[in-house]
Figure 1: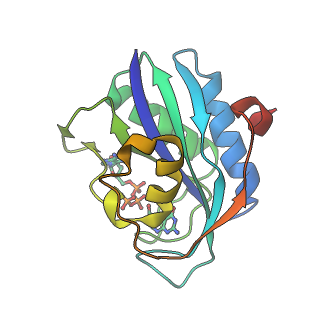
Figure 2: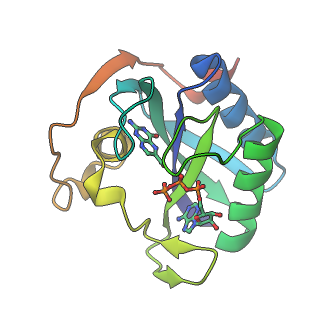
Length: 160
Ligand SMILES: Nc1ncnc2c1ncn2[C@@H]1O[C@H](COP(=O)(O)OP(=O)(O)OP(=O)(O)O)[C@@H](O)[C@H]1O
Ligand SMILES: Nc1nc2c(c(=O)[nH]1)N=C(CO)CN2
């Protein structure tokens, strides 16, 4: 089985519901099992700063899918939840990024793993360290404004 970590973020519409729907859709996929979720964090926008704060989280999943097939599933969920690409790094109902896929390095036109900007983003590193403590050595948080928003005891508790 393959192990992957995804970053999820939302700053448009009902942010909480967007994250919940996205995790539900992942878990309902016949070849994806969401194993653990981080807390939810409210985070200051990084990159393009003239926008509302995000809610961010990280999930760990097991999957029988290849990394590129997992990307297709993530992009399908973005479409289903009405994601529009208007401004680079701009507001979005939902964003799903593949951070890690096993310990593989992938560099194709459509997919780069580990995610090339993950180590520059506290909205990724802080939730990731919560559920993958072994990555602590590599992660150096940068004080970008990440506030704990809500913690769940289990995946089921979150998506009920
Ligand atoms: N690890 C990855 N996870 C998700 N998308 C990726 C990854 N590597 C490359 N991509 C490609 O990046 C493209 C743009 O993705 P997206 O619009 O979500 O970027 P973004 O979230 O605005 O910015 P960033 O890539 O900095 O997070 C996608 O079409 C996808 O093919
Ligand atoms: N706080 C925060 N800032 C961002 C985010 C995000 O999810 N959270 N996503 C971006 C593009 O992936 C750009 N900037």
